Amino acid sequence: MSDAARTYPGAWHTVADFLASAGVDTIFGLPSDALLLLAAVRDHRLRMVLCRDQRNAAFAATGYALQTGRPAVLAVGKGPAVTNALTGLLEASCSAAPVLVLASGTAVRARGTAAFQELDQLSVVRPLVGWAERVDHPDRVPGAVERAWTAAVAGRPGPVYLELPDHLGTAPVERPLPWSSAVEVSTAFRFGRDSAAVAALRAARRPVLLVGGGARHRNADRRIERLADRTGAAMFATASGRGTIDEAHPRFLGLSGLYLRPAAEKVWHDADLVVALGSRLEETTVLGAGVPTVLQVNLDAEDLSASFPGPRVVGDVGAVVAALHEVTGGGPGAEPEWRERIGATRAELDAEARTAGGPGGPPVARLLAALDRTLPAERVLVQENGLTDMWSYLFPYLPCRAGAGSIVPSEQTSLGFGAAAATGVAIGAPGRQVVAFVGDGAFALASADLVTAHRERAGVLYVVLCNGGYGWLQSQADQRDLDRARFGFVTDVGPPPAPADPTVHRATLDPRGDVAPVLAAALAACAQGRTAVLYVPVDLADAPPGLSEVDGDFPAPRPEGDDDSTPGNGDRA
Image (cartoon, rainbow, N blue to C red; front, side, top):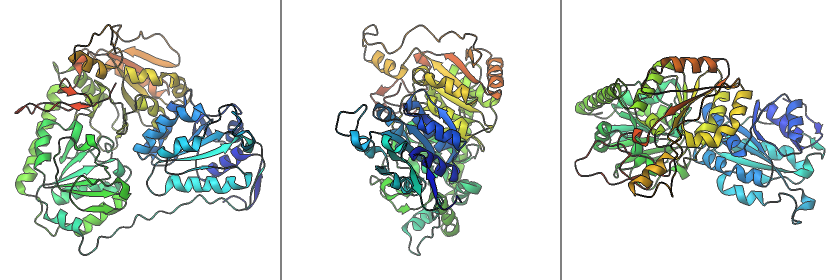
């Protein structure tokens, strides 16, 4: 605990001292040109990840928060600096990533005078954050930063915002009390005697567990997998829930909704109860699911969907699953035939992936198989939502087994999120290989911060699928016979050359050939802390199966009797 009273030379030194006392060691961002924050960071020995673009900085902070489960700190300037970061705040909000945003602002005396970069920033950010405040008097700085931190670590995770106007930068700040950053949050949970949730699970004969992003960091001692074993349930994950459970588990059948494989789709539709753990049941998660009975578990009542019948439970996912262990076992359990179907479906999925990843299989499927063989077991996969890179969402082409991790964009699928978030993920996962599997359109938006990844010695491996730009839009334009010369989203120039570069290892990888030596060289560079970029030439035809049948955001209705298609993303690039 810090001494009881202290005087700081300004607000940024006050904030830096609090962050250090709270155990924060890293700040992401691009501060205002006054640079007072940098002096405070230097004096308090904090790590400042200086990004070249505020949006990339917000994405990196979000990636760090999702990977670690701890609040990330994002520092930006004022006016356009704040609006540049808004897309990142949208991602952090929809991903439930705890991010503390510290922004500069117009001084009190200058407001309303058309001051340089003046903006009502609170009105701009409030729709995207769970808590927002602007401090105008130096005496209020200590209390405000403590409240901001409390809002970031307690309740539903998400971004919070604290604005420190310019006049506070050099105004002395008095802190009369010791810092208080510890926040204890109850995770205890107990079901009532007449719980509808318990009754539903006990009665289920064909249960399914759906693991969402709200279960991330809530699966201590593999309690979710053990619940599946106890109840005989099949397991699925949402895209944001990947990495929570061991995908090598024989009851795991892949991702739900948009990414559901045809073999597993039959199991999903025959379930008599879906236990949704930490999922908001967004459109892409339940696409084509009908209206099954759903037992919903979420930390916040606002995240419970009203679109499905069934019991609803508000509580910490980990605590609720632990409580379910104590009360299940009194019913008939899953049908023997259901357990057999789960095993047979898993075998079918594994066989399909082995065939696709072998000689003669689709090029990107073969690449994913090679990555799976080559990457360490504890790798962390960071993804985008492009036309071709969606192969990585299809199970089990690049599975997240025990020890592996996955970071994906939220339902907003902000272009460039995965490419920029990878640096923050790597900083939050030291010693683990981070692999960003991205399209060239997304990579181009984030490439300004390759220098940041190099400076931080992040060692990220970028696998960039190059189809000349925005493949998803081009695939839809081609289906509509739009003139590519007038409405072109891709070019035919191929991947960029791979010049000698002392800071970034670059190479071109042909997925149709022997990729092992190219991957080995890239991983060797990453082990030295360098960034490695592998450019992979692909065609629009290399999209995952089923993505040629689309209608705007989502797939067109499937023809009667056609069960061999995989839904694709909408609004993807």
